[in-house]
Image (cartoon, rainbow, N blue to C red; front, side, top):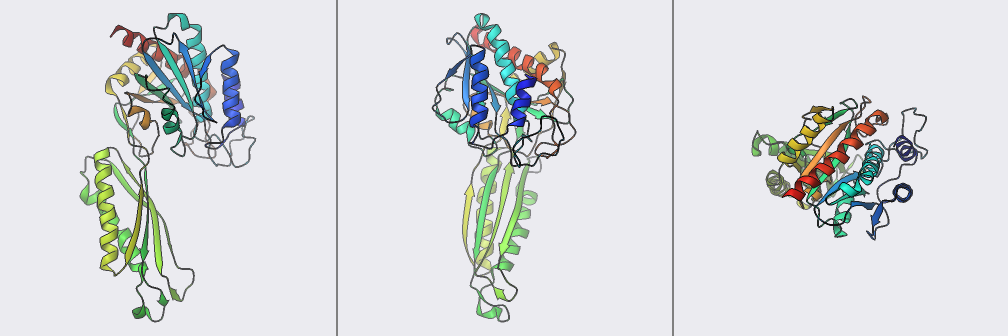
Length: 371
C-alpha cells in the first residue's frame, strides 16, 4: 500500500487525464486476481469482489490531482511540475486498493459483492456522474467513501450524520449599460455603479433571507469592468459561488439572486445576462450508516470523532442520491489543509483505513444479506 501510495503521489494527473493512474491501479488489481467491470470509460475503473449475487456495497476512491506546485520536500514528491495530489486522492486510491486486497482474501465468505470505485474527475464534479451513467452501480445498496483529514492524526475516523458537505453552484452575471466618454457620464449608462450595488445587495441574501439555523454562503469572487481610465465601459461582469447545506435553501438562494441581479441592474437603467450552473448537491450522510461505522471503528481500536461540516463540496453526493451511505474522514495528519502546496498524508494511516473500510463493507454485506 505504501509503495502504491508513493507511486501515485509521484505521478499525479489532472481530472479526465488519469490514464497512467488508471493503468497502474488496473495492474495492481490484475496482479491480485481482482476482476474489473467494463465501464467503457477512458479513465477510472470499477473493481468487484464477491459472489456477484446478493447485496452490493460500494467503496469509492477519487483519483485525480490538482494544478498545484508541490512544496513538501518529500522524497516521493510529484514528478510533474505544477500538478500535485494536494487533496489526498493518492491516499484514497491506495486505501481502497488495500481494502480490495483484504476483501479478496475473504471473498469466499462474502454474502454478496463489494464494488470498489476508482473515480476520475472529482475536482471538476464530473467523475461521479460518469461512473453512475455506466449503469454498473444501479444495484448498490450502500455507498461509502473516505477523505483525508489533516487535522486528525493517523488512526482516527471522523463520522458525522446528516449534512457534511455543501452544494456548490457557480453563477455569472453581465451588467449591460451604454459606453461613453468618462467625462460625459450623462451620455451613457454606467454599468459599474449597478455592479457595485449588486455586490452590496447580494450580501443581504444570507443575512436577511436565509434562516439563521441554516448554513449558506454567497461569495462573489471575480469582478471585471472596463480597460482604461477615461472610458465608461459598455458592460461589467461578476462571478461567484453559492453554497448551501440543503437543496431547499439552495433553490431559494438561486431564485433570490437571479431576481436581485435583474432588479438592481434595472433600477440603474441596465440590462442583465445571468447564468447559474448547478454543481453537486449537499452530501447528506445516512444517520444509521454513520452510527454503525462509528461502532465498527471503535471495535477496531480507532479513535472516533464527529468531524465538523464543511462548506466545501464533493461529487460523492451524486451517489447518495441513488442509495444511502456515508462520507467518512480519515485522519492523515500533516498540519496543512487540503489543496495547500505543503499538504502531506501520513502513510501510517493507510493500513488502519484499509482495514476499516474492508471490515465495514463486509459487515454491511452481512447485514443486508440478513434483511
